[in-house]
Length: 358
Image (cartoon, rainbow, N blue to C red; front, side):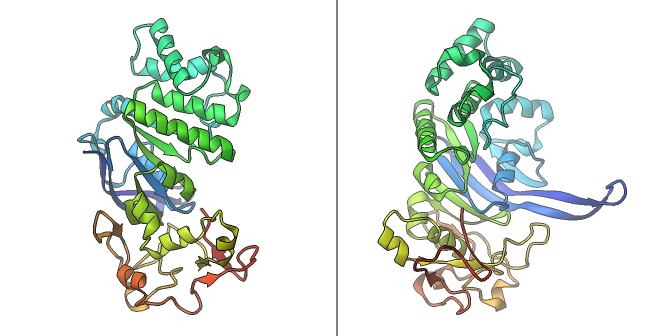
């Protein structure tokens, strides 16, 4: 059963000009028509380059960003239309883990105050003793001693601070947690510990996650289903195994080719798709397929003018590409100038080419 459904969600930020910035001269199309579904108890991974709109979408789900249009349906209720007071009550069931564990914690509050603040706001716990007992239980779940409650955020390591951020979300007993780059600021060894902790908590508490990340290895490890975003829109979506085994969109193929392989010989000889140019501005996205300005398989007569729909090609695998089938079977070959290249002992992209890195 779907716990969360997004229907054509758009988040457009106005661009203001004038002496008093009172004149709208355009819009930044940060999220431009995203539809997806997240099943209860599962993890949905959202990946893409910086600036693709994935964090804005995560914040829009919680209505931390206003939605321009569309529907965000959580457990049968459209959050986009809720009055502020009802939305405040609903937020107990929807929580967020932020990318920067230090920046998301109030440096002037000790850990006990940070964890009890949300409980007091939502009326959880009969008294201080009940709240402290709940906090002690959560601290034990995330692997932190209760003796640390009197300490302040700067006294902890990065991994410990992220555990505090996780505990702050858990004390409100949420059903859905948006994890915005939850491990990107941590060392690799600590990343694995935090990811394992999130999985353990999901199994024991029945949580549902939306994990926003740029590290494809992390997303593959934790996600049941993955959506790939480019310039404010989903370009491909499938279950984790299918997406990694059979990427169909040219952009997804480029992302996959940038993921390091642990075998040195295979890493030196495998094909890597290099993309020319930068990500276009979301304030003036290109017409037609938004990826056509960087796509090696571009067919100008159609790609430049017609925006592809996100279409199911079977088994819930959705792709927004006019020529996904033809690219997969080799009917359409990449252009000579932008063709995938086999890199040997190359220290990095050169000559204005940009290897997509996540």
